[in-house]
Picture 1 (cartoon, rainbow, N blue to C red):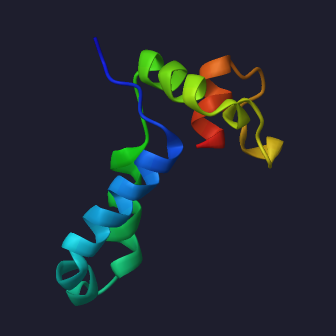
Picture 2: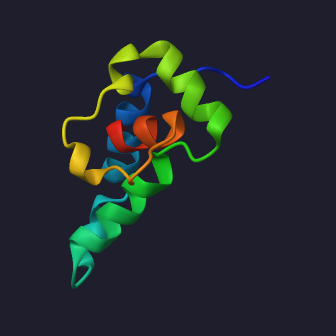
Length: 83
């Protein structure tokens, strides 16, 4: 069984990882590319993980910019985009 992870914990984990790798990030020619790579690594990709994250934060059922969604979004697309 997987442990439910909240958006708060996802953000905290990402910030911790960025702080742990600050020197490597700052030494890159394009630091934003590496920051994006780290951020992408913390977005849940498995549908069950997306639903678990939604269960801890119901605001993920809404997307601020609906233009980012595919034409016929699934519930998983909505959560992924909200994150």
